[in-house]
Amino acid sequence: MADEEQQPIIIVKKSGGRGGHHGGSWKVAYADFVTALMAFFLVMWLVNQEQAVKDAVQGYFNDPVNFGKKEGSSSVLPGGASIFDSDVPPPKQPTGEEGLKEVLEKAGNQLQMELAKIPGFDAIKEHVHVEMIPEGLRIQLIEASSTDDNSSYFFDLGSAKLSDKGIQILTVIGQELGNLDNKIVVEGHTDSKQYHYNDRYSNWELSADRANSARKLLQEKEIESGQIYAIRGYADNSPMITDNPADARNRRIAIVVLARDPGEVSREIAISD
Image 1 (tube, rainbow, N blue to C red):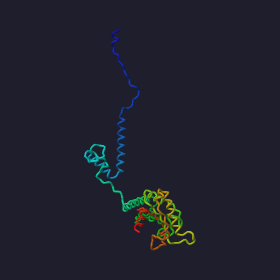
Image 2: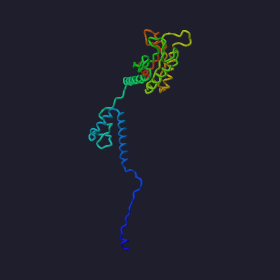
Image 3: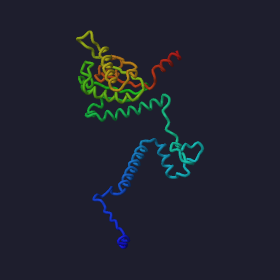
């Protein structure tokens, strides 16, 4: 009886039939993925920064201990400097009339690139003039060619109704100029040929109506109403082909983006008088 009491008790534990949670290796893989994703987003952020920021980041990683050790450092690390504390000066913002014209010149270049994306634009690009003038940026849509007096690209012939191509071109112009704050003047011009059978509608009405039609569409395409300073109908009094006022190429509209606020110009004229 005593031998039975002293016999050791053996307990056998059997593992369950299922495999558990596969350990913690998945956590390591997930952490690597998150780290790589964070690094990717940091690279994408850095690519879109100004050159001064890129240079500062490069300098920090080249020498993280000594980089930016100067008074007033805004780094969260002791002895370090913010990546924005760089000896590279920030890019200068355009100031004055010359600076404003530089902004308009860049806007004109961007506009020409956007217009070039329009299907079939190569066939009519000679009818779209983008140029800098003393007043600012001027975009001219010229109706006819030198070889065809009856051609009309942007308006129906003898009408203020925009053609499909005119709507397409002015839509792109409106979207680009809507990014600016400058005042805009829209001008209408005709050739010297007169209406023979309509005494109530002349080149004056046609030039003004075409300018107004262009103005309406521009305002539908991102341009604020306050950005439009004036619409002007010149009839045949300001020909592009000065030695031949009857030339069909004088039929055009001009969109002038002013480099200066017209109110400032008026005040300067009043003072000088």
